[in-house]
Length: 288
Figure (cartoon, rainbow, N blue to C red):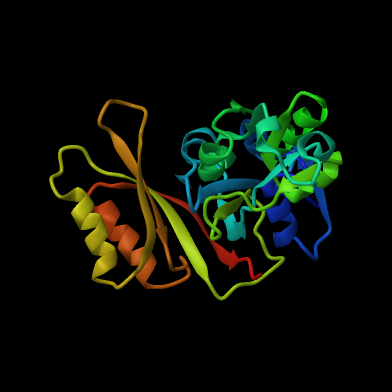
């Protein structure tokens, strides 16, 4: 039995996790906060944590990146990309007019996770500018809150699974600003992921440059460039040690089980960089 920790039942993380483990026997543990998700696996209560790390519209989730680097020592075992389809959810009997159409003027408050709201700015700006906006820990908690307050003109932005879980109605489907809204998830934990195979493999490293070394970042990138190793992401984040001190998270489209990549990392270390291998793992993409 695989024990997996993730954000609340009915969230996008929940849908995405069930896609990755579609044919496996899994025990699911649900938590309200991302800190509890990380800590459940770090303490051994669960085998894996499911972590949303990057979104098409909002980019990287900085808080989750920082937890991976500063708070836990859990390797990445897999990544996959899953569609983030947000919907406007509420009580249809109080939001629909006599013709059965949604009356936006009846909506007094919209509740959701801040990332989900940021994915739906066009709807919020053009149709719901009059409504109060409230941020909450997750989209499914938003749906639960709306369910508990009938007759008050409250709506949530969340998933169809969340609406079904709490018995609410999808008032308007697919309200995200772009149809190609996808979220990249990481599976982290000490247990190797062997339940599925992929032809695509990636490696993520954490690099801290030596101080007072002009051109250090250029040399790091050159170590990959002359070996024709492709990088799919490079992002800087503060080390939290001093102002102006940054580390780099680099995603590499190559497995450590090669000749070229280990040699590139040794070249980077030779110039004084600190390099931490965050994981070498299979990569999956949702097929509609």
